Image (cartoon, rainbow, N blue to C red; front, side, top):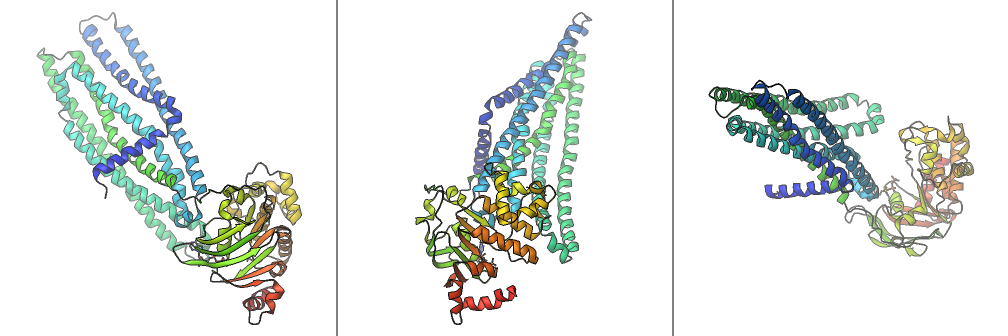
Length: 588
Ligand SMILES: Nc1ncnc2c1ncn2[C@@H]1O[C@H](COP(=O)(O)OP(=O)(O)OP(=O)(O)O)[C@@H](O)[C@H]1O
């Protein structure tokens, strides 16, 4: 456990790090701080002038200068309003600019993390970090540091003017301070706790909702709506309770401060009136100005405790965001080879791989693919087929052995150069919200519409895309929900083809489609793998038959490897068994 001192040091470090983010906006930051400092004397000038008007003019029955001073007060009011507007605008502008930059930074960083990070981190967490946590950092600028500074400045200024006006009256007013301090402390701690609960509950609610909506089919098909609704109602109830608790503390605290302020005022009037009557040191003007001073003193104190909490919460959020940014979990990218194109030779030499520890998923794998060859991988579920494709892409790092591409170690290639020469078609096609065209080009400006159409025509997808309302501009709903499985697959084939990869990795979908679509897909795959090195996790008899080699994988080991005809000859062979049981049956 960190000691309180360590915690404070850490908070200061976090604060410094957050403030350092404002470096590119130094001028605006200086402007905001200057305005904060300027506002304090500006706001106390008014009551001071009122005091002067009472004492120097009204009290002595001279009305000659009243208009002038009234105009000065009005002018000051306008100036203060302008300064306050500029202050609020500049501090929020600063906060929003900083978090805009930070969001981009976090998003880019998340994009570069290894896939293993996402295996361990729920999607909801990454979204929370990029959106709501960063939003809280804005409050450090907009409601935290600079406004706290402004409030402190105005407290100091008010106290100074009060003391110079009448130190006795000031001391009378301050007798209630210990009560105020105590109330602020209790409030601050209580609200902090309930806000922490609010945050936890909202995180739970986010995660729950996200998962249920994603898995809506399962919920509905198994009639789980009622159970899920009950669970949701439970989380919702906790969320409501945490919020109400927080609001309750505000409801108690603010009237308490008002009562304390009223007590100060009452004490001041009681004592001050007697003093004026006695013709002591207090002037009538001071008695008129003091209630305004008291109001000005209590107003910032009233919100200060709350602002410290906001600052604290902003710091907690910043700690989480920095944790993501500091995560050094990228795939090592130290290679320097950046070939324009690859010949497409792939070789595995005694490759071992485990997702965790020594739980080997790939065991001593060795095989070779010549340029332009197709390798079909078959094997039972969980045998490691997808894993092979994951390590070639460097989504995950293999631990032992060597993978060579065109005779060079995979790690010798610059990651982007390597990946730009490889394409992957996943079984579970993922489409983003946007047009068909955008889903194919992935917003790469170098890929023209003509090229997309050409690729679509080549693999026989053009006709179906053209028939969609709007054609290539047809709006794909989230994850492509409005398209059929076959259509989604075809779009992902075009996507792979326009990138014209030298090595293609294809995870064939197992979902059955109607015979006509099946024909189109089969044709598309043939075109796709034609004359380029391809590794296909194969489920179609046609793909397997056409492949140069077939690898039968079992528990991460190669059981058989060779061309279709050769493997079929193996007596009691695994491929022969699979072929007869699975593929022939499916084909029939
Ligand atoms: N991200 C991961 N983290 C940890 N273990 C994983 C991960 N992905 C896969 N595995 C494990 O690795 C093993 C091989 O998985 P893989 O996905 O490569 O199998 P597969 O042959 O492609 O199976 P399928 O035909 O069902 O897609 C499985 O036991 C699986 O549980």
